[in-house]
Image 1 (cartoon, rainbow, N blue to C red):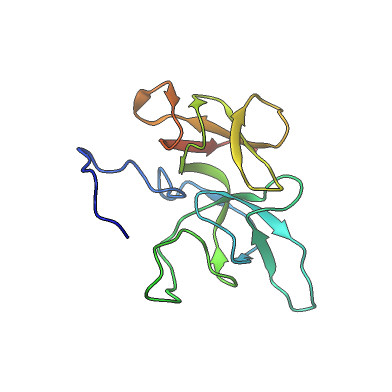
Image 2: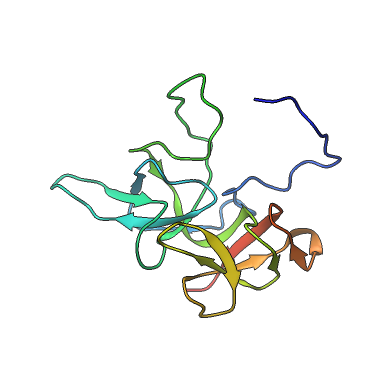
Length: 163
């Protein structure tokens, strides 16, 4: 880990996967556990269940449309005290997956207010586009602090309110 190279004037708006307004999210009816690739602040895909007593499992990649957006919570396990901080849920750990709500995320490219969030199931990569574009997640981009657009790396809000 390197030395600090900058000091911000204001605190961060929100961490990836953090709720904008706590308590307003709607989650999946099923409880999913991570396969070890599931990351807070990203989308989750259902993995095939194997075995008779297997748990429903979610992964960072898959097929079809995502199950939902992975919330960041403060429950964690440190498997190695020398490892760096991570947003990835360890394999077998339960992960809250939201169907609706407002969550902070990091822009993966230039985004404008109202664009749809697109997620490639093969890679989990997020881009932005128009309604009904390929890989549309049903979530839209909101830009904090009244801005009209965001650059790659900026904090944005992913929102899904309706069905």
